[in-house]
Image (cartoon, rainbow, N blue to C red; front, side, top):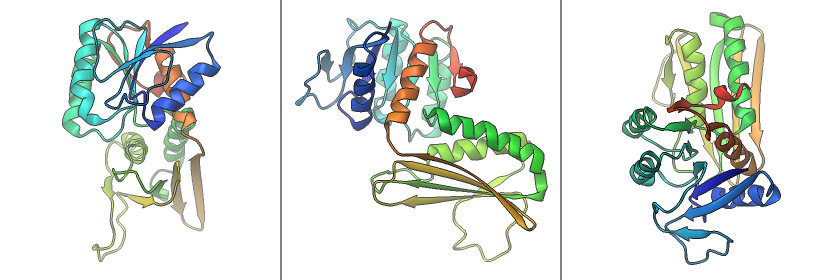
Length: 251
């Protein structure tokens, strides 16, 4: 049994986590929730507007907002509860705070909790090793029209994975509208689409002379991210302080 404190319990992703936990009561239990909006809480666990020291659990799952990071990290460190950060949209300063906090408490942090997208990461890294400079790389990401940040954290994570294999020789080009020149060999183009209710789609294009390889992941439900976060909570609950990611799940 893995016990969970859920930050962002009344949000869309929080509700998906709750639904999956309810379907797997023998394996998981939410013991407390945190959310700025508690007016319509109807669950069988307590929800408050902030973290309370009385809350104890094997792990915290965070699907909230970057603004809550400081209180989240403080509570996790103070109470020695491992943390799964599934919130997106952090700036570089906040990411550094996460890395620093991981020296004192186990933190599972990734830009995308989908098991499938992390398998895609492995595939694109292997693809680049084979294709090298003979193929140009472009990334296209599509999300719903309510998503605020662009490009997505996942698109950047994919680009970083490829760039790491290439000894960081690539530069990222986000908008070719004002660039009146031919494409350079050391570019990765990253393109964002915001429309309708698209949950999430990421396509990595390797295009060379007379052939193109496309690797695509499509999420049709937010449950894939909730399931990944729950699996991460189960994984991290007994770990030593450190920064963990989907790669540590042996995908």
